[in-house]
Image (tube, rainbow over all chains, first blue to last red; front, side):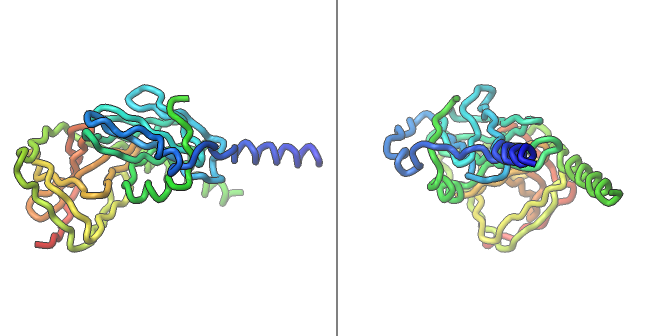
Length: 145
Length: 127
C-alpha cells in the first residue's frame, strides 16, 4: 500500500515537474538589449500549468536549438528577417511557420495538447497584446540549453 | 468496457482527422509598391468557417486588415495588430486572399504559397 502511494506520488511529480525559476519578465526586460535594426525578435514562452509539466522539449528555430519549452518560462531569439520555422518535438514534431520583418517582434507560445502516448507541445503564434499579458508572470530561462 | 473502447476509438479518429496537412501551392506575391498607401479594410461582420483540416476559424467583426500585395488568386491582406494562422498537422501564419467580396483562401507568407478554401466565404467590410 505504501509502495503504491509512493509510486503514485512519484508519477504525479514526474507529470507536473517544476516551474521555471529566474527573473520575471519586467525585471529581465530592463537589462534586455535593444533589438538591432537589421533583425527581428521572437519570444518563446509557456504558461505555468499543472498539465504536462514534465514535458520540456527543446525548441528549434530553422533547425538550430534555441531553448527549451519550460512551464512558466520564456526566452527570446534575435534573428534575421524572412521566413522561419519553429519546431518542438515529443512523440511527434509540431511545426510553426511564420515571417519576421526587420525590427518586428513576434511571440510564440508553446502549449501542451493531448497526444496518443504522451502529450504534445505545440508552438503557436499569438498577438503582442495577448503575449505581453501572459509574459508578465513568467521567468526568464535564457536561450539555448 | 465496450463503451470505453468505443470512446477510445472515437478519440483516436478525432486525433487523426485533426492531423491533415494544410494544402497549398506556390504563389509569388507582388507587394504593394513602396511609398504607396496600402489599403486598410475593417471587417463589418464576423465570419466563421471551417478549414479542410477540420479546424474552425473566426474573423472578428472590427478586425483590421492591410493590403500586402497581390497574387494570381486575389488581393492579399495581412492582419493589423493581430496574428492569424491556419492549423492542420502544423501551424502556418496566414494572410487573407480576397477576390471580389469573398475570401478565396489564404496566403502563407513563410511558404510564399496560396492555400485555397473549398468554397469562397463572403466577407463584409466597412466602406
